[in-house]
Image (tube, rainbow, N blue to C red):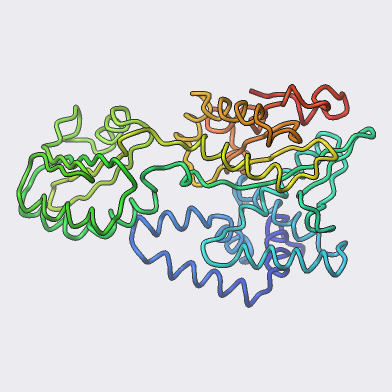
Length: 389
């Protein structure tokens, strides 16, 4: 009996990675997910690809549409192996091993497969030049006698956050038990608002919150952090936790980190944000400025295919609608380091998994053409160079 396509693709990738390596990786992720409720949830989201492939490889698994799409991308990576030279196979094996180590994920490899698949769908012949030939760029796409080099890179939104999400989750999990104890002794619904001028040190902030709670509601401020504990008076907060969180999100903006603690009918909402806006799009521009001269040969037009990780639907949509990505990409295209770059494309997991607008970008990606590049108006390259935003 033949396996469903998604299960076959998942098993092919796992076989390529090595059954023993794969089992160890999944076991390690399961152990790490017990670190704390919020941290565990974030870890499962970050390693969604590995955990999904592990589930699909089990007998009788029935994939959702996005799971089948993810498995197909992993299957395309596995399908590379038979056609590679010994050196190419070693590079592929090294890339998979690195993706299954420490905090790394499979997302960069899936982004590579996704980018290649999209270019083939536009009529290009695509070679995995980085893996197959050891090229500095990742893909070589050719059409009607014209060729373009493509660098596939993943940037974490954490690089532009003044209050890293990982630190926030560590703090919220670490102080959860103490806040439940405090709530049990102080029944009611409260808002603890934190404004952090600079990056947060979870241990130091934990100590400040502990000291503040011992003194009761009010404002506590020093050079490092401003803390304010008040009754939660938002409309609907007394009966609807979701409504309270939505109202706080509207008030504090997309950069704010929110968490709730409940005990004995009481609730404490924690809200933290930096003293100034996050700079996610600027961090992506800085990454592109470093990538272009290092990875592109300069002998052909180049594309930087950027994937933005560790972002949710709200943040990703905001980056697009506020034109922050477009502004930073177009600024990058005017700098000297962008001379070999004919276009920049940007995606998130939402496009990778085939979600639809408004959560995902229209057309499956954002793309910005460099009008100053000599190849900008080549008809053969138009499907991958024309701006989509």
